[in-house]
Image 1 (cartoon, rainbow, N blue to C red):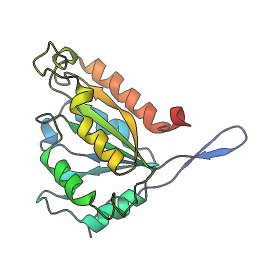
Image 2 (image 1 turned 90 degrees about the vertical axis):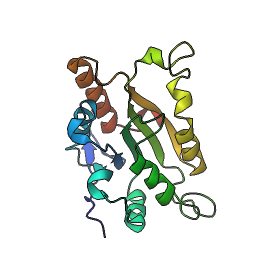
Image 3 (image 1 turned 120 degrees about the vertical axis):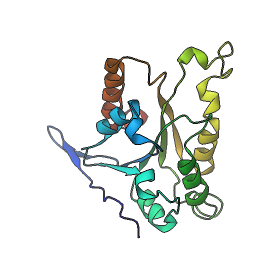
Image 4 (image 1 turned 60 degrees about the vertical axis):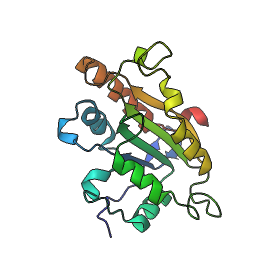
Length: 198
């Protein structure tokens, strides 16, 4: 069995009552994390929150042999699934794609299986290009929302609720202050991931 970190459920106490936090699973994929600039800042923002589990795919599966049963258990234990990754060739890194192909299988996530029904999906993405590059007049020709549609369709196939992606454009070129501000927004959302949907 894979050595996957256990999550902890927490409550935030208000003046009169405690509201249970939704459990968040951050599935992180970066094949060269030591040379990542923006994703390391974002990853630190996600760490240290007791209701958030950070699951580094390349750390767990450097050989690409994915423990599907362990991944299924992890998914079932969480309410919000975050896919954090850089944009690679208009998609995600290879291991994350392999994870989706093997873990989100027919009979579990779709078809007769509805294990992920009513859970929430959010993509947290960094890009090498500027926002202007993702337009009809830019070199990528299409907006990022359109490029990410395969992920949205996968979420819908699994009967999950799609949350608008959180994107940091031009991630290696923006000022560090911009990365930090983006990471703070990410952490603020992680603290209350479903607040605007209730």
